Amino acid sequence: MKKIETVAEMQQMADAWRSQGKTIALVNTSGALHDGHLALIQAAKHKAAVVVVTIFANPLQFGPSENFAGYPRSLEADLARCETAQVDVAFAPSVEAMYPRGYSSYVVEESVSKPLCGVSRPSHFRGVTTVVAKLFNIVRPDVIVFGQKEAQQAAVVRKLIADLHFRVELVVVPIVREAGGLACGARNCKLTANQRTEALAISEALRRAQEMVAGGVRNTDRVIAEVTHILSQKRRVRVIYISIVDPVTMEAQREITPGNSLLTIAAWVDEVRLTDNTML
Image (cartoon, rainbow, N blue to C red; front, side):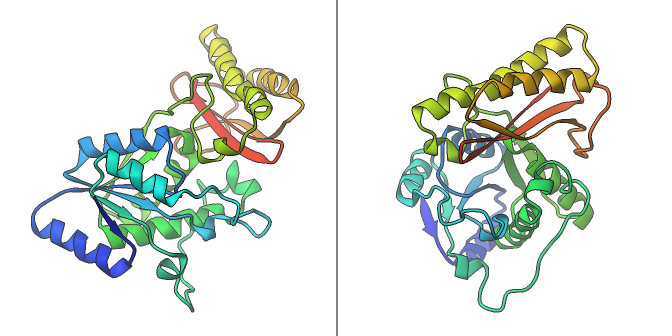
C-alpha cells in the first residue's frame, strides 16, 4: 500500500492507472476507520482493479458550532487497517492541500440536501459535495462506495453525479452493526458504557418500526409516534429528527410504501451525535 499526501501525486498515480486501463474505486472517509469502512473497502475491491481510500476530516462539513477539532482521528491505526485490507492507496491530504490559501469555490446541491441533516447542519452537505467533486477530479474514480448509514449523503452525491454528468457509479453497502445492534460509526468510540446502552434504543426503535410495517401499518405518523416513544424512554437520548422519507429524494412521505420508504433517525446521546436508518 502507498500513502499519498499531495494532490499532484494522487493525480499522477490516477493518470498512470488510467493509462494502464485499470478501473478505480474510491472510498471516501473522514478517518477513524471501523468495521463499516472495511465493508466499503471490500465492496470496492469487487468493483475495480485498484482501491483508493481517502482519510480526510473535511472542515467544510462542520458548522461553526460543531467541534471539528474533537472529531476522532487515528491516522496510524487507519493506515494499518488499510494495509491489512490491501488497499492500493491511502490518500491522506492536509487541509491546506485540499483548501489552499485563497480557496473560494464550492459545489452546492439544493434539493436532496435540504431536509433531515440539512436542517440541523445547514452547511454540511455543501462540504460533502465540494470535497466529493474535488476527489472526482483528483482520483478520477469509476466507482465511489458509500455506506447505507449515510443514506442522505449517498442520495446527495447520487444527485450530484447525475446533475453534473460525472461518469462515476455510486455503490451503497448495507449498514454494518456492532454485536448489540448499534450501527458502526466513527463517533461510537466517544460513547461511555452507559451511553452505549442507551444508544441501543435507536436500533431497537428501527426494528420495532419494521415489525409494525410487516404487520400492515402504513401510516407514517403511527410509526414515528412509536419510534419517538421508544427513544423518549432513555434519559440520555435527545431526538434531532425522526422521519420517513423517499430514499432517493429524501422528501417526507405520508404513507409508507414497503421497500420504498426509509425511516431515518438522528439523535444526541448526551454530546455524541448518532444517525441510523432502515428501509421499511
